[in-house]
Image: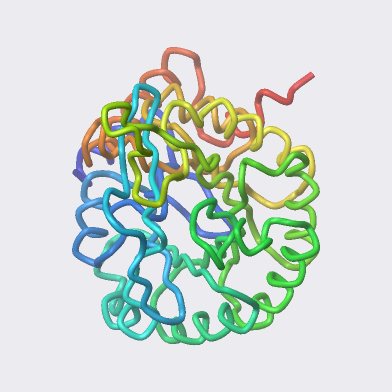
Length: 315
């Protein structure tokens, strides 16, 4: 795989930079998909991802919601996993020696409040993470993200200001697409010391109903919307954030092809997160997206990713 990418980049440079972290290509495994073990992260790296993000870790273990927690529909997926994870103590054991993964690894942390975030962050000390993503935006887990009021400018500024003091690693803040004026929250994160924005988390919550059972399909009733249905919203959010802040953006939401990735870069992202498409196109989606990007760039006379970032904002 490495040799194949070496040949791909002889004419087109797919490398990019995200919060000072150099990536071989702009594709990043989004948090929550295949990020539960170091072994799975290695597999994603071998499949061509430029960086990977672990599944979010909390202070204490979380069991998550009861099954069913994920359901597909004609425009994507609906999920209410509920941040199931083993907690920071066991998570730190799993994610030791991360240099073995072969690409930059981004930590994802969650908390019920500022104190939780700091304790989770402390548990990451000494590990080989390249950056930390602070998620303030889950739409379906009581006590966290949107259901804890963490998606306001005031809460964002408070949490990020404290977390910023606890690490020298690049800090990304993951925002919700539900925010009417997402640029305001992004600016609050930037003013509090964030190095980048991850945009966006899942949309919603939404619902699907089993009409034979006459009940919502998910056990939690509602969940976050991801996949193709989210892409136009995610693009608009990235476009708005790019106009509002100077820090880089990791654009996430519905990306499954090279054209989608280029579209997100043109909206203002410096790199693109891929999640739901791992299910629709397989783990090879990262290499496929890179190849499709290169083909488009060659045809259209683009030699580097840098030329694409923010191109849709040109007068």
